Image (cartoon, rainbow, N blue to C red; front, side):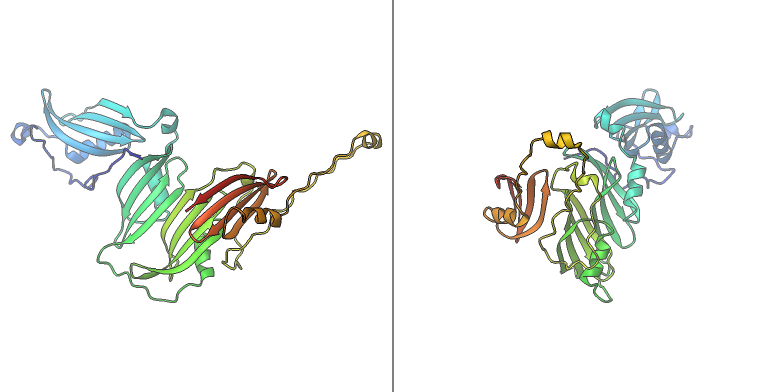
Length: 354
C-alpha cells in the first residue's frame, strides 16, 4: 500500500500573524522595514495556486529575499512552491505526479471525499491521505468531534464508503441506557449500510457496551458491521470484495432480505427459472427440423450431495449459472466455494477460506 497525502496535526490551525523561521532563514530584524506575508497567508496563496492542501511550509533566506518554501498535495500530485514573502509572487519549483494520468483525472477532490465521509461522521478533519491498494484508490480520513474519533475510508473515484470506524475518546463515558434491540431491529439498522444474505448476527460486549456483530454477503461483497445494541448507531463498517463480478448476475439489483428473516443460515431457494421464449415455426419447417434430445441437468439436491463429498458444513448459497452449480458452504470459521458442472457432476472449481 502506498500513501501520498498527509495533513500534519497543526495544518490549518497556525495562528495568523506568526511566522516560523528555519535555522538558516532570514532574521526578524532584516524584515522589520517591510511587511511580510504571514504563514497563513502564504498557505492560502499556495492552495489558490494548485488546490489540495499544504503538507509543509518553511520560511527560508534566499538571495532575492525571504521566501516561503511550500509543499502541497493535490489530487495525487506533489507540488513544491516558492512564495515571495514580501510580494506574494508564486512560482512552481517542482511537481511530481504519484498517480497515473488516466486515474488522476477521475479522482474526487479532497472536499468531495470529506463531504462523503461526513455522511457518517461528524467533527473536524484532522488527517487525510490518498492510498492505493490493488490499483484502487481511497481517501483515508480521520475526524474528531467532542466525543468520538472517526476513521473513514472513501473510494477516491466513486465516493463510496468502504470502511468506517467510530471510537469514543479516552475518558468519555461509554455506558448505555435503554432496552437492547431485537435481532430483527438490529438487522433493519444494518440494512441502511449493507445488502445481501445474513451470515452472522451476534450480541456481544465491546469496550463496556453491548454491540451487535453482523455479517452479510451478496454475490460479490462481504459486509461486516458492529452496531450499538441499544441505539442502532453504526460503530464499525467494512466492505470487502470476495468474488469477482459476473455480468449476468449483477444485471439485477441485489434482493434485500425480507423483514421476517429467521436469521438462520439455511439453504436458499433456487433462482427462478428463466422464462422460455416461444418461436413460431411453419409446419414444413417443423417436420424437416430434426429432434434434439434435451440434456439432463443435476437437481439442486444432487449438486449438494456432490459438494458434500468435498466439503463439510452447511450450504449457505446455491445458484445455477450458465450450466454450473455455484455452491457456498460454511463449517464454523471455514468457508467453501465450489462449482459443479450441472450436466456431468464434475467438480470444476474448489476454494477453501479459513
